[in-house]
Image 1 (cartoon, rainbow, N blue to C red):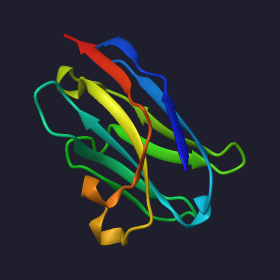
Image 2: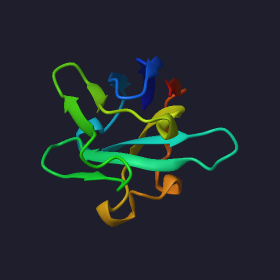
Image 3: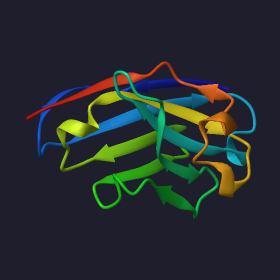
Length: 124
């Protein structure tokens, strides 16, 4: 599985960005696709996950109500719409793919394919 993230940039607090992740490879329909982020000096943390075949979504509490994860199966693209951005959202954002059980998908160790990351900077 190959993942290519894009869409990061510099935005003021309160603004919006949409991240994209182009997905290709085997068993895409069977996978769960997640977004993680890593701020400087911090561990990589879970942001959101979606079942590629549809239906289930899950968000970290810190982004619930502000971020929306979605996917376009015709374009094989994963998205993360980020609204009401805060300076604490500043991080490198990564897309990732997993075949793991739904209950385990906040754990970055359950993802075995990762994109290269796209940097998001939110200024105050």
